[in-house]
Image (cartoon, rainbow, N blue to C red; front, side, top):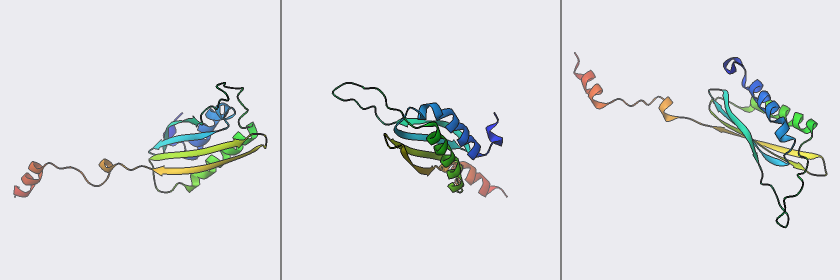
Length: 136
């Protein structure tokens, strides 16, 4: 798969397809996508801690349904339109499923990253600057 030729929205769609089975078993957490040069680098799910009662870890509750996971994926892809003028950063999708009600919610957070080395300031050693001034 050539990621350079693939729009970021398709890459996010691919990420959510890869994470679908994991989301189906999660009641809450954060999907994290790291981006460099408009290409997805790392991605994954940070689950909320597993709860125990009286020192016993019980049967895991069902996370999202397939329909909820599909709606979550669509929301994530649609959110890429809100990303403006940055190519490096991280997108976090916080989600939770309310057990028993069938309701779920999600919020999106964009983080842009900049690197001073890639900016307009370049280090030039003094001896090169001095040599340039003395040249006729």
